[in-house]
Amino acid sequence: AQSVTQLDSHVSVSEGTPVLLRCNYSSSYSPSLFWYVQHPNKGLQLLLKYTSAATLVKGINGFEAEFKKSETSFHLTKPSAHMSDAAEYFCVVFMDTGRRALTFGSGTRLQVQP
Amino acid sequence: DTEVTQTPKHLVMGMTNKKSLKCEQHMGHRAMYWYKQKAKKPPELMFVYSYEKLSINESVPSRFSPECPNSSLLNLHLHALQPEDSALYLCASSLERGKVYEQYFGPGTRLTVT
Image 1 (cartoon, chains in turn red, yellow):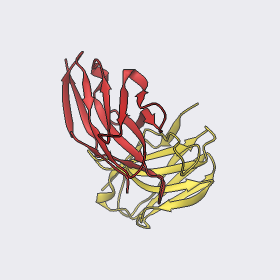
Image 2 (cartoon, rainbow over the protein chains, first blue to last red):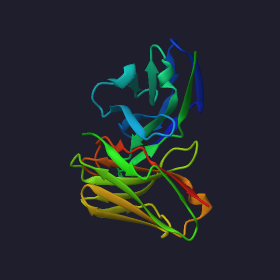
Image 3 (cartoon, rainbow over the protein chains, first blue to last red):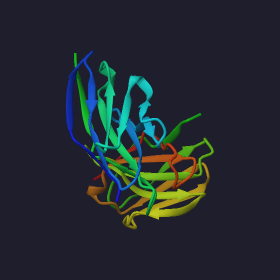
Image 4 (cartoon, rainbow over the protein chains, first blue to last red):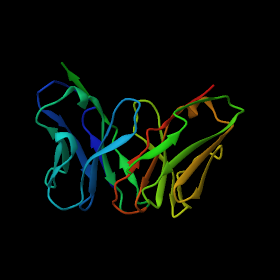
């Protein structure tokens, strides 16, 4: 079965410093992976997705993620954090067997300090 | 227009009430979803509709009754809810079910059961 594990429940950075949110996946073959962001009291917004094309995926708002098969990872990065980046981030895998639906990681809360 | 709208934004209901949540999209998407999200948790899939037919019911109690009157509209009828059903209810849509298409999320309805 495919699943994702977000390694940090909470990450705190200073404004202007790099952001790293870690996600490992479990899959017997190449999965389709997403990062979604949820600002307080809001719905979810897609940041980026990987579907077996380029391993370095660029998303919105300066975020990017690199698919590393050897490490089974799909970490989300941003060179310089902005206060508006403070939110909950979900790593998500598309289960392409069985019920063929999204499975969410447990989430990482990003806090940005001034 | 890449918007999913949900009404109402907030709902407070007693355990004997009957109420409905509404979700609408005009993107021509043929798959629509209901998720339940408890505080500090990822969304949990409840129901999936594909071409206006129920495709997935994740063993949701019968006090939740989904309805898809047409391809743009999704309702969730609520009856005899319990306090533990208090949560953020998110609606989403995608081009089709079962494929790696982006899901667009609405802002959610914050439900409180008293």
